[in-house]
Image (cartoon, rainbow, N blue to C red):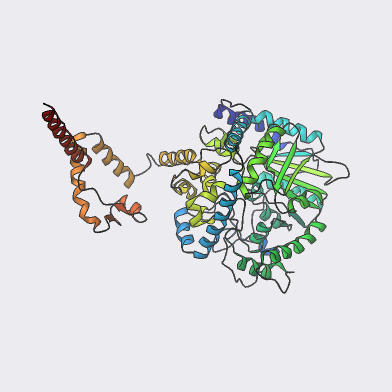
Length: 566
């Protein structure tokens, strides 16, 4: 598929108008659905964190913890309420977490590199993926309508949700109609984003995560710290302790051996699969031309959830479309290699609507906007919507490897998180913790090289930094940065001033001592930088001095040669 010139601003407006003016969000072929007003009070708020400790505490009885405490369940999955710098300092002191994440990301990186090296057309696939996503964004309103028609024609029921609140209201209403008190779930970032588990728990419905890593996180009453490997911050000893303390039916002879841990989880989950009448899933991508949805996974839990229950409810972001089956083939090669270092996911499930006598006999699709239409209208930031949630950018990021996912205070950590979260939450005001996320980056460009969809992640991060700076202009007194930049511009506009400052800078060379590096400088702006960085000592000569001396030496040498030739 060839590249397409996109008018992103008009695309975002078109999407919003299509969804609002045509009342698509209110569409439902499910006659009994009535959105309920959210509860005005919650009985499971944590007085120390201000966030929900989650309905999971009502489901899982508390036991003495013999593992590192996790992150409390927040009220807002995209806004946990703390600044990155504060959380990063705490995480850096957790040496066990850093070892766990360092080991896991290194293993995944090495596996990915091996599989990518097998593909002579890898860069061509990345370019194709980028062009497919650009085309999808340029034609998203039409593709969504086509997708809805095809899902409906094949027996599915499509619901449209403006935001997390509406999506949860629809999901809760569907589950309550079925009269069940528990559901099973396939791993899904979309349901994480809307806090679905907590909303279901508030009405007495237990949502059981069936992905092994998600189950570990749920039992620990924790938050995921990676897009693909949610429990990457846990090691085998902690997993065993969590199973013994929270699973309820863990075998007495449970060991640290991965196979034994996996078998214990399998035995525990099998009962859930066989008893569940309702399942929830996300979708790696929807195919507009047929109304088909997909789940790529490695454990088989997804296949169980997609086939055994009577009712299947899928929550999917509106951006997760591809136009055709041929386009899906491109991502089927990129996703497993980038996410888990596999040539192909062991379980790749495609389903289209309802098939009589085979699988769920009732299928609901909730299409979630949740600010994606606003992101689509941004000519730079819209590229973040091309993300296929493979986690490759997290695995290569030096910042993520040191601080882990919880430091980002969002269900989307790492490079894609600092691109996407501030846009989804419209967080650029300086008093908003999410506004500082774009600065959790060294701009090393490794994430852009790793991204299978060829997203210019550093470019989006720089754009988010610009929005942050623009949001602070003209509000209150000038900051230290404002004063420093004003002073720097005054110097840099004048050649004579630059020459004078260059000479003065060489006087600071002795401050470098024997190591020729300068540590903390207790001055505005400089103090923040030198808290974490050493500065090389200034050279003995300024550039202008060196240039002048080199020029004079070169001139003298040239004159000498000419004299010899004479």
